[in-house]
Length: 208
Image 1 (cartoon, rainbow, N blue to C red):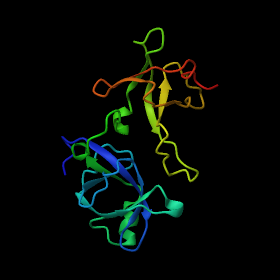
Image 2: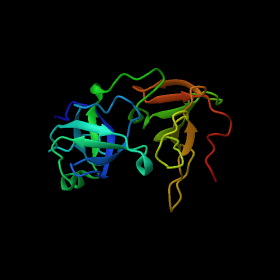
Image 3: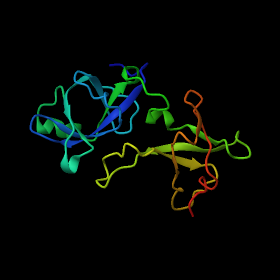
């Protein structure tokens, strides 16, 4: 698998062995229902890396299932060539990538997290809507009491690094969380890295 001319998308973070045959408990990095399909070709990458490891060989997703109980909201993956606990342990901390071209088509008004990160946010309700107010540095999802199971009806939260935020000597200001709801959304232009929303007054104020 060459990473030179291919855009990649992370779909799972490998956590730890979950079984005796090389199964790996993993954290899904996508909520697309049909992205984990038996026979899918995947590549290994270091955590937070945008491309596969240079020496990585293509792997095949052989099996997957969604556990219950304390691991609800996660996924167990069985990858080709990983057939023991020790081999699964060696993969812990890596993430799985798939070529962006192989991803299923998105429903209208839905976006990949990686496409939103780095976009500039503009507030169309401000006096000057052409002024950039911040940049998307994080996307968060509301979860249930277990801290992992996503609440399907809750809007994602955009973590916005405001232009008006001033770092202190000790730490940078926390991003302001903005609900990414259709009612506030004006336009999303991924190629231009631009998001325009109509935000309620005061929502962009940085916390004290």
